[in-house]
Image 1 (spheres, rainbow, N blue to C red):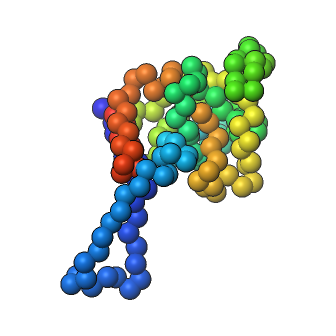
Image 2 (cartoon, rainbow, N blue to C red):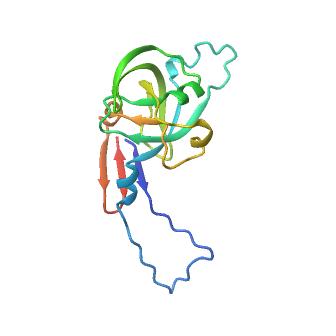
Image 3 (cartoon, one colour):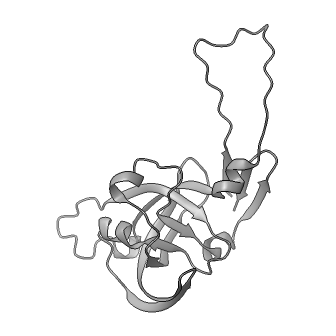
Length: 174
């Protein structure tokens, strides 16, 4: 069983605050209200396809991006430009429903790892692709307002998610 703790609380002062000084901390729900739950994930081609066409056994590209938990998404969806960047091979095309309407989408197989957590990775996950507005040159370095993958109910169905709005924290257990 793995766990991921997400919190938007950071304490860093330079110089350190002397111990005799009292410090008050205010928690706010604003980060969860504004951006929802975005967690760091590592994506690569699915293990089942990792050696397909990889003659010299070179390591396959990976990307660490933010994954956005989308309770409205039946399946997990990767940004098309991120799929191209990772060199993913399409396993087929089907229609998906998006906020912008019904679209044709390529499907891919990925391995999804959850950075900085003990959550169990999802191996050989079938995902659809669409334009999520992800920019490879800008967002791989950690733009907190951008995500490369929508994590759908196909992944979240095996999790227990506790959302604390007042403290803007989330705990996920599998």
